[in-house]
Amino acid sequence: MTRPVWTTSVAASKVLTNAASKASFTMSTGETIYGAALLGGGTAATTKGDSAGGGVVFCVSQFSSGSKAVVDNDVLKVTVALSAADA
Image 1 (cartoon, rainbow, N blue to C red):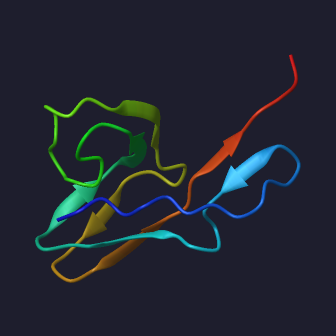
Image 2: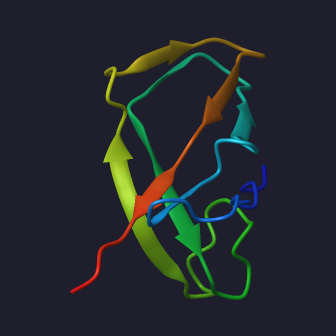
């Protein structure tokens, strides 16, 4: 499995989001999903489980609606919004 690329729209009101191009994950087994993370950089940034290549954890969050139970072939679509403010 590869990590989807985070594709953002044009920033609006100091927020970047992938709402127009959600990250899509097709499940291969039944699980309970509690949240998501935005990862990047390193030598294999799209490879699940890559730890040797370095990289950055930009953000991690639990889902606002709580956990999500999934079964084989469910598709989970995730939206990430990053906001910033002037100092």
